[in-house]
Image (cartoon, rainbow, N blue to C red; front, side):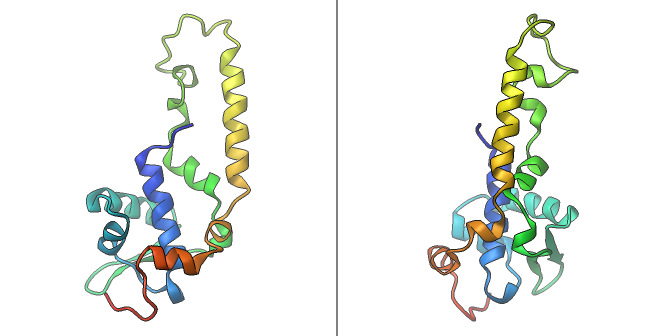
Length: 150
């Protein structure tokens, strides 16, 4: 399964927020620079994650975002479900737009759905805490400094 850039960015934002020392506010700009990815795309992702209660967003001068829940409460599977449209994995998953002539008797849809459920079940076993257990190394790779001011 290939994840969209949107999901990739959501996971990166959450990972960044999870390793932020002392849960200090992060800015979209610093995350964009750390990962060398689009500021505009990250802004949209940040807003959505905030609407869904995964990030706390603070507007205004000195604002930014931070995790709204503990890293142990957020599974990778939850983020993937939130940001991916499961009906788009294959055409036959989308009942409204499915034009495949084999659908009435095709058994492939069931196999693919079973594979998707297994994929998501694995992602559900891992939390942000699990994937950031090496936080010191991640902070170093992201260019984070203890006590660093924006």
